[in-house]
Image (cartoon, rainbow, N blue to C red; front, side):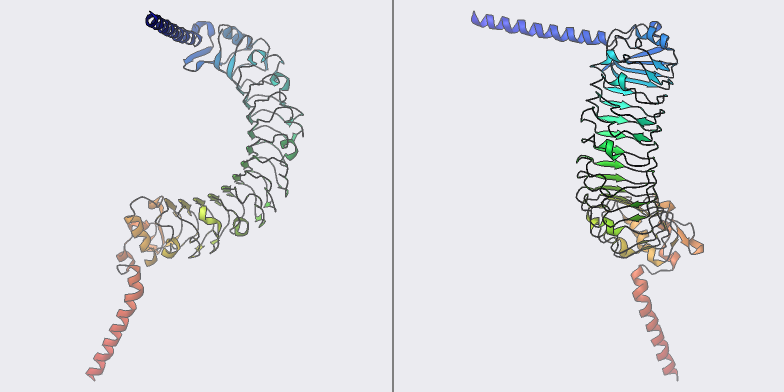
Length: 483
């Protein structure tokens, strides 16, 4: 009897579980259902596994409201684009719960304070790019405590006022790229919590690094300040920035030198991008304080005339070095000493390199994978120079150099042909420049006979002189005997 009772109880529990699963599945299916398309025109609704996606294009605010009134469930995505929406009124989103909200190309410049009241507790992403905002709509955003990602790219914002992002305590990622920001109040990022990890202030009109306001964001990990008008980095200026910043992007500014302790106190700094500046001088102690963390360094498209060895030699964890498009003319013996032991990727293309010291690459460990030397002024590929890396490197690009094809390049041709994997990038463009009869001939197509070389370059150096001596001696003996 007891056994039957237990069996019945288990059966009852199983039945309830099945009922719950069926009911939940039905409810989810209903909540993801789109209304009749005629009722929501000019909007389009798509049912997706995670929820409903609604896109509305080319409508007025009244048309939008009439269409959106037909949705009585949560929207996973609401995308508005190319609508006549100079202002977002309080009734537009009334009653809707939206997880990800996008409004682009609406010429929007203002938002009613209560416009987003129904989004409180549900919104995670808001993108208001390509509009006409002249200032941050702080009052409308203040109650959105669940907002994680805010984007206001390509607007007309000129300044960030005090507590511009008040209340956005969950915000982790924010982008203000492509505005006209010239000034950031020292308290602009105050009262927004400490969760902001990524901040993009690129393509604005900042003339200095906004250190004071950034002190309000101690948890910041990724800072993008590219394409501004910053011309100076002050020694020790990151002193109170916090110890979490691992990436800083200053590409496309007007910086002409890196001073002593340029990035000191950034204890977690892993990546620095300084491409497309005007850097000509790097202080020997420019990277003091980040020697144990810096792994990625981009210095391409600057005005360096030589390897900044004194500044680089202290870096213990550098994995990528990018010096492309500078005016470097020589790779010296100590160019990679001693920091080269961890380098995996080296970019030196589009310089003026005419000479590589025979021992310059010896300090590169077996970790080196990519070496780019194309578009320089190299005339030879010395076998001894590449001896230490030729068996472990994965990509070697040396095309677009004016190579003088003598017997010294035979080893390189043989290496290209015998290598089990394709290491040399763009082999058909790796060509001879001289002598004239071999101009534009790919190195892998030339032969010893074309160069009038013995079977190996060593034969040229050893056997040829011995044969000459033998022949001269034989002629002398013949003349002596004849007389």
